[in-house]
Image 1 (cartoon, rainbow, N blue to C red):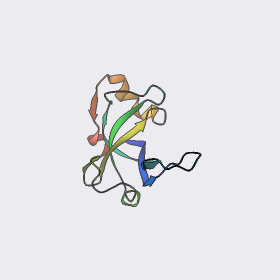
Image 2: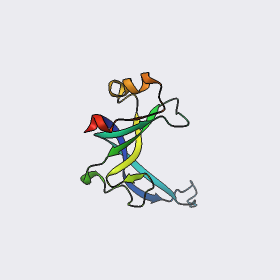
Image 3: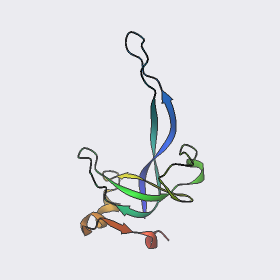
Image 4: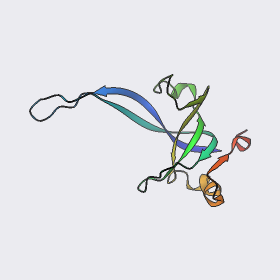
Length: 113
């Protein structure tokens, strides 16, 4: 099964300033971008965002797109497989069987092979 997913492209630190120039505590900033890739597992999150509903997916990340993801990120499930989110609005037709089934989790690795 193929889906459009969000993956982090870069992670950097930013120190915000007030109008008077005073610095605040540094914060981590991650920018995401969309790619289309193969998905092996789909799951509903415990809490859902009402504005942008999504599902959690275990997806294969091509090697040229892995450079922005830290190696020790706990979202890496196994080599090359990353747990991330897929917005329902981008994948309505692809996710329709999963959403209609009422299951909380579905293994789609047989369809991906």
